[in-house]
Image (cartoon, rainbow, N blue to C red; front, side):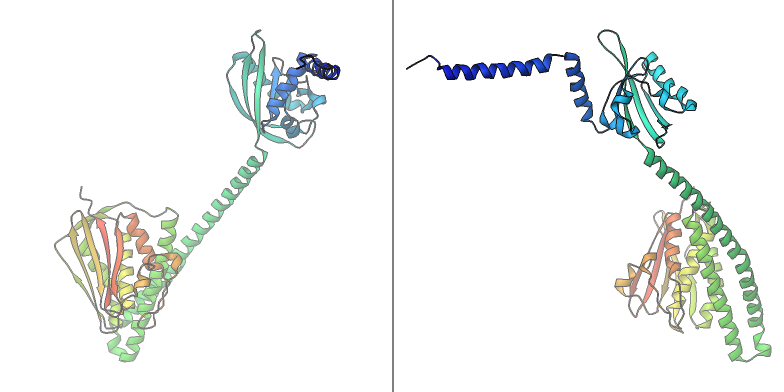
Amino acid sequence: MNNQLSRQELENQIEELKKQNEILKLKYVDQKEDKEYYYHAIINSIGDPIFVKDENSRLLLFNDAFCKIFKLKRVDIIGKTLAEDVPPDERESFLKIDKQVIADGVENINEETLTVREKPTRTISTRKTRFIDSEGRKFLVGIIHDITERKKIEESLRNSEAQLIKLNDTKDKIFSIVAHDLKGPFYTILEFSKLLSKDADKFISDEHKNYLDYINSSVKSSLILLDNLLNWAKSQTGQMNTNVEKINLSILINDVIEETSTAAAVKNISLNYIPSTKIDIYSHENMLKVILRNLIYNAIKFTNPGGNINVFNVIKQNLVEVTVSDNGVGILKNIQDRLFDLSANVLSVGTDNEKGSGLGLVLCKELISILGGNIWVESKEGKGSEFKFTLPLNNP
């Protein structure tokens, strides 16, 4: 075997060595340029703008993203502070933070608005820190986040919030007007209809007396709807007064029974309260009346003329359970689960063609939730319904 290389093989090896030598010469001929190229390649791989400054805030190294954010060319800004490229009124603040970080080495995160060379103003968040090399030289290293669009969105949100506050104030004023200017006339009609009904036997026929009863009942229903709307609005905007007080539950239920008795009498419905032992609870009187009033009127609506409605309560551990029971038309199972959901929009016509908004039961659930209780219904179609709710006794 011939261990000696042929002439052609030697020439090929010599040619390859020449190529490698040229590569090495190109690579190491200027170590400074090579290092800058290497460092630039590293920071250029980072998406956010990166920069390195000397202790006089002159730019030594930065990536393409830095140039892009300010729309500047590398050759125009290398070795410069950029202070001469910003408006005079911004120059002092432009360099102040750089000097502070270089001096004390405390990391700084700052938001600032800059206009460089009359380019579009940018709002940036800059994080700067000090770096000291092995020779004791100080450098400023920073990373920039362009938050211009975020600031625009925040400003838009602030404007929207101010507009919503204004609209909300207008809405509150409208509700105040509704409460004052509409409830007053309704109460006047209601009281006059009561007076007329009281002495109706002396000067009008039974038929006209029935008309008066219907007027009285209709006005009450309208007032309840108005109260429901106002109370619902208050509960949704956090304006509901939730201060609790000691309440005799039997007295409160009797008061509501008396308020709703005329509507029951119009349909010849027997409305009764079956009291248990005396129960004192700590709750909100007006909310409780709104809840009971809505449940009783709902029972009247879906009970046939001549039917019965009973209200009773029992104590279960640290809760009181109140039930409004009727022998009316009942509720389909697939509807029961949606009665307390406003978005379900469950609207039904009563046994005397009474119409409703569907808001009453939704409001009941909202108020009972505020009071720390629960509400549910137990019903069978054609056999009546029982609406039950619990409230904490909250004995001190």
